[in-house]
Image 1 (cartoon, rainbow, N blue to C red):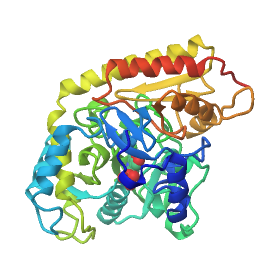
Image 2: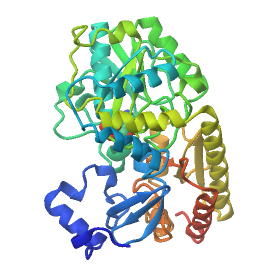
Image 3: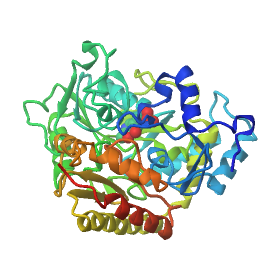
Length: 439
Ligand SMILES: Cc1ncc(COP(=O)(O)O)c(C=O)c1O
């Protein structure tokens, strides 16, 4: 079915050619490009539940789900209604709204130790602002991040980021002056930084409590607890970047699994109901340092946008604890069956599943603990020397299954994926895996 009116004669290739003429690389975010897997990106016409439809009318089971921003499925009627109702009253005001208060109350009531929260428009802004706040509060400059964790594309946080920056094989970005990263220290994930690194000069340690931008890499037992203790002992703040994990792995966040309550949080993706919204917050004594109450400046014209807060609230209010238990069960079963497909095909692959998140690591059958191991898995090649993930990706795409076009992203199974969708993906995996072999 074609719904692009006078543009309907275009296919994916033509749209991409047109896009490249006016948008660098034809994409507004590098993770959308097919540079790691080869070929032409699919141009989306619409999404419906668990499906995406491209400009040629092809249907795909979508395991990207806007990189985790969608959990109720595309075009979810209740979310659309909430957004529509809000839009009918105006789209942005530059003044306080009821919607932002309601969403802030919902988030603070669900997240342990989150007394205050401020809305922004992207996860990048949330992480950047949380770090600024930590620096302002502690009066220190140095920060610690972990290799393979992604905290958005601000200058000081891009180094050794996972996700798209890993996919295109960059250590960081040109255009970031060395002075912006002089105070960023990178440590291996799942290892507590030693005391000569995590010392009293460190403002904060920022971490994805479950890493989901180098594939899904769970925290080793004791890692988050040890990190929290190490931070406390030197007065450094601990920031959980839960832009992916918040309201995705649990009714609340990673505290539900590790019991660690960090000083600050970053949220994004799900809290905007599919619209641009993110947030950072935490302890009230720290957050009170933000302007206008305190000296740490942070602002945004569209921050707390009423459409986004309405969409987010509609989503969060429908996700009770049972919904997460059911989703986790669904994902666990899915991951087991995926793993069985690879085992039956004799392919060395590890399906990493943690809570409601999962991803595939090729080239290894054991658990991945850090970025180094994730990178080695991502570079696994077939007996013909082709990148394993790229071959698998295209074999799945041909069967109508949309995986992320890069090996470092999580697979997002949500409330709209039916058992038959997931069965279809499993059968497609069996076909894709058959005849694949490693060098
Ligand atoms: C953990 C994490 N933090 C921050 C970000 C940046 O969010 P945004 O893309 O909204 O700027 C992302 C994006 O994927 C993320 O996964």
